[in-house]
Length: 206
Length: 206
DNA sequence: GAGTGGGTAGACCGGTCGGTCTACCCCCGT
DNA sequence: ACGGGGGTAGACCGACCGGTCTACCCACTC
Image (tube, rainbow over all chains, first blue to last red; front, side):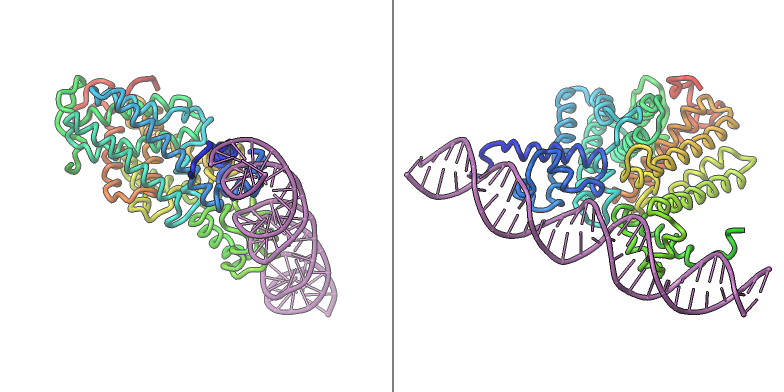
């Protein structure tokens, strides 16, 4: 019962919606466009997704699941080396986001289109806190001095990198981002090879 | 001639559009809403702004002028102390953006709603490169080792701070941002009191 | 005192929005 | 053999979109 066949139509709808919503914005894309480009009938779409908001939720859900998998994958791959995992996460979490070709983070973009407690904002906050928590875990395993504060700084810098990458034409942003990333991490590590003294980053505890 | 009286109606239209566009998004706000809340006729609005896009342009123009003035004001106020100007800019450029109450940067939000070469993206890129150039100037006056790269890092971090502030509920973000900001600047200064050795931030020249 | 620019009022346009309805179809499992 | 779930086709709904039109008004200036 329930999910029997994969439903090719449903898959086409989701992929088309994902592409259009991400590339052009949610409000800018109507149902008509989606059903046309997905080669699907109106009825079929509304059978799977009772309202446009449901489709939006499914879109964000896919993206969210993807990001979760990406992060979990990196952490698992570097299970015995948290420091290397953090570096790899920097790369993975900004993949395709530099060079002014990408449209940036789907959650940030979606949040810009809606107000209050709309699902887009809920999804955005959810995944952001989750990723930040993963950062914090890795930092704790490194005996970092300020795991929570630094995790939030990492999230902040990553956010800025993705948004800047989508807006500016700068082709050196990737290096600027990565050096800043490494810097933030190493500044709170004990026996760092680059010899930073006492907690310059410790304006607050934890 | 041309601009004789200040035209109270025009002013009301602009202020209403600014508020609604910023708070709820551009696509989400129709002309009907604006003329209703501005207590103005349809004809009046279209007399001043031939199309919605013109109104959007005027909205972004106001915001852009405001930011320009803010930055110029700070630089002028600290004309003899570039280092203090940078610190003050950090505060000014994220004013009202922390605590999850603000909606963040109007240019970033507008850019998320449109594609390609739409005015919103042009405005965003313009002001971002302009502000970054001001950062770079100040850093040069401080004999910073990597003024351009660091200026872009500052812009990146500021971007992340504003967006994170608009999305997350975190109430410590301001401190995280400011410490990161100071860190980025001081890491490339010569006779810094916090004793950082040779260029760890200098992964590239200029 | 005639003209003009900025304003009001409200009907009107074609198009698109999100969403519903009816009717037919076809493949699959029982 | 048949029932049902997933699919197609296309008309239809009210509402709203951005934008235009006509007609009247008022205050100010030349």
